[in-house]
Image (cartoon, rainbow, N blue to C red; front, top):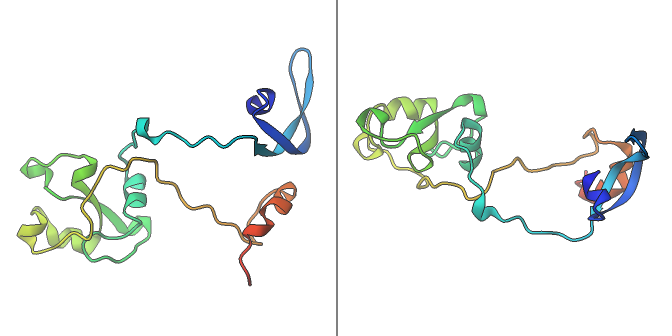
Length: 154
């Protein structure tokens, strides 16, 4: 609503629902088009270190064996163990499967004879899950004409 009232978007479709202020009523927009794309400035973004963001950064891949796992099967491994002075920071944590994390134990990768697939770095932008669309996806019918080009061939 704010972008629309600031003339920053074009409203392509409206819901049948209205929102009201003290002096006016507006149909609620359902499909918007930005008038001008503004590239986000990621230089000021600080990505919070969390399990989910770590697993997204590492693409749900164990950084020791290289296999992909569901989130529940992954653990957070401190490359330089906390018990030996390692910190809980982006550059010292990686996603690891349970067996690899157990094998590494309270050692550095070198001490355990294991190699990291990638050196851990602090992401400069917030990882997000890729948007996917299929005919079976639930989306408002108003959106269908605008998402049709995203459908995958059967």
